Length: 111
Length: 114
Image (cartoon, rainbow over all chains, first blue to last red; front, top):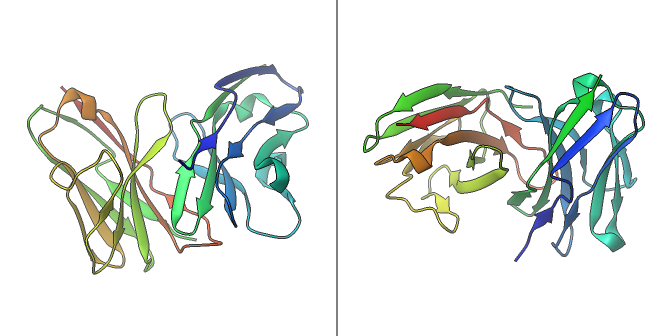
């Protein structure tokens, strides 16, 4: 079955630490890839997306992600996290009209 | 982009009753989706609602429990029928325009069944 896997359930970092959240998917063929963020008490917001072209995509708030087709991965990175990055992060993959979400990674940034 | 309004934003309901959640979009969209996000978990797709056709339900979800209407290109409703405490969750409406577009989400409806 097609699936999206996020390896880290809960990540705790100190401010200024670097972040990498893993995302792997099992779809074949052409896919669209997304990272969404959900801040406490707020709705889902798009961080970044990949449709085609440069596999390194930059999003809002200093986040970036790299699509590695051979590894079926789309890991999210940020070189220096802030307390305000505390949130739930969801990887999503779309193939045609079928969009699936990973289980989410809760990021806690300690001031 | 699309702005999505969901009503109600939250509700507390008695078991055995039904609740209808409304989703209004500020532009015409082909596809609308309903998700459930249970506490501490990810989003699970309930169904896809396209205007002019019956909703398509995912495995584990049935029309009798979650009837959906899609009367036009800007509006949809999801009803949670005969509720039990296990239905307590956040229900999210989402829209997109298919491949190579992003999905937009409403703010969700937080449902508590007592």
